[in-house]
Structures are given as structure tokens and as C-alpha cells.
Length: 377
Image (cartoon, rainbow, N blue to C red; front, side, top):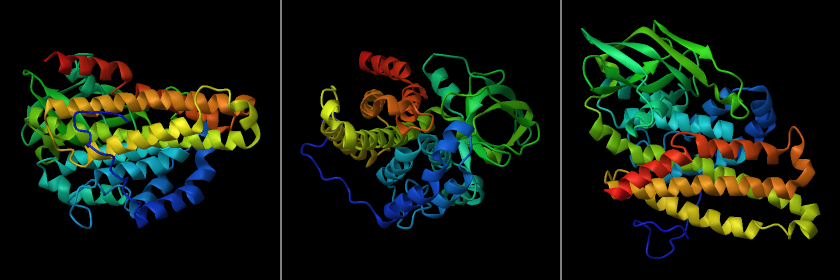
């Protein structure tokens, strides 16, 4: 079992799937599965599926203000993302972007955004992304902050360029952090892609995740009103939202691992007599997946712990999830054999997707750098 300082003393049963989980699984099988190859190879954006998933409640579970019972069910949000990612991790990544964007508003101080934007994001009526890759690297001392703003009457005027932000479109939203010119003060705000002066620019083709609607973001005198500010000052807010931000990413990794196990099972229907000689077997990966889910759901049960010790456990789990995804996808490819090289084969797609789990911010090297810093204190 994956051990952290916040691990339960005894193995707790996994929460039973809710009825909405069953509905989401059905929607995924009937609507998403037929599109998976096109999403991966042709860059088709699964907008219709995302909006339908939102109507089923896939994006409101972690939002107390938008859930039916007023609770924060972060494990439920992660489970929903697992269901999607097991079939298509490009779509699972888009779901994470959606969840993260709503997470920012839920914990912000903007009543305007909570009233006008958050309910639409929670229902999938509006779609959104997260531009925190650059700021997270800035916080870790890896790169400079790319957006700068001037304070003006009623808000800020922002300039700069972000190389890629995902799950975007002409009317989508995303959270961004900019530095106020003349100071070291960072401010976080919600950006509307329809804002005057803002432009989406096409990125070079990717080897995976091509259907995630990833664009470069160009800010040319973009006005951001005070009502759209998510956090100022920023440090306490970031400390509050960061565990949930990272834990939600586990939905991608856990779902991918589950999908890889399914590929291995399918391959074993005809190749078990020779696949038995491979190092990693279905039973071993299933046991690791159960342990990882238990550790993840336990930490996600109370994600508002702002301590460095808790965040260290979250980062350690996220690192383990990346490493397990790489191991599972390689195992799936080896189990599939030559059939895994077919253009539409799930095995080769999941191998490419697994590298994204390991590279998306925070990447493995970023996680290890942050863990070294936290452990040195």
C-alpha cells in the first residue's frame, strides 16, 4: 500500500459508486468510446461529451456551493475523471481543466464569478481551463512569470503570452496569474477568451492530447475588471487550493492505469500463454491500483489542509501516480505485442498518454524538486 503520514491505520473500503457514476460510465461507453480514435488521431474536441457529462453532475461534486447536498466530494470528482480517462485521457484531461477552473472560483472571493460563471461551469454549460502551469513553475523557481499587468481604474490591463493552455475556445474561461508592474505582487483572475485584446494562437501538432483544444494565449491590453479577480493577495489562496488542484490530477493517472489493465486483460484472451513471462501482470497492477485509489480518496476526503506536511503527502502520491502510469502503459504495450502498433490500438495511445501524466505540471522532475524543498525544511 502507498504509505503517507496521513494514511489510514487500517484499510478502509472504497466508496461504492453512486448512481451518477453508473450514468457517466454509460455515457462514456455510448458517446465517448466511438470518438476516442478520432480525438487522438484527428484532434476532434469532445465538446458534446463534456457538456453531457456536466449535465450528469461530473463537474460539480467537488464544489460545495453547487452540489445537491452542499458537501465537498473531491473523491467523487476524481472517480468521475477516472471513468472518462480510462477510455480517453485527452477527454479526462479536459475534464480536469474544467474541474480546476471551477475549483478556483469556488474558493475565490468574487461573488460576481460565483453567481454568473460558476454554476454554468458546474453544469457544463460553460467550459474552461487552467493556466497555472507557468505560475506553478514560477513559484518553484523554474521559470519567470509570463504575464504582466498595469493597475488601472476598476481593474488591470494585462499583456504577455502563455505558450499553451488547454480546454479553450472562443467563449471559454480560464484562471491566470499575472505580476503587477512595478511590484512583485502576483494577482490571479478569471479570463474570458472573448475579452477584447485576447487571442488564441494555434500550437504545433502534439503527439498526444491533440483533441484537448490547447492554444497559445496572447494578451494585448486585455482589461480584467476587479470583479473577475480570484485572489489578491495570492499566497494564502494558493496554499488553500493547491492540494485539490494536484489531487484532481490523480483522476487522469488512475483512470489511465485502469484502462491499461483492461488492455492487458484483452490481450491475455489470446496471449496469456506467453504474456505470463512478462514482469508486470494484471493482478499486480490491480493491487497497486486499489492501493493508490485508497490513498488518493483518503487524502481527498479533507483537501483543505494547508500544511506543508499534507501537501508533501499529496505530491508524493502524485509522483507515485505518474510512475505507476508509465509502468502500466509499458506493460499494456508489451502485453498487446505487435497489435499494439496499429494506428487505432489503445495500447500505443495509452503509452503516449502516460507520458503526459508524467510531464503535465507538476511534472515528475517538478514534483521531486518540490519534495526535496519541503523535506529540507
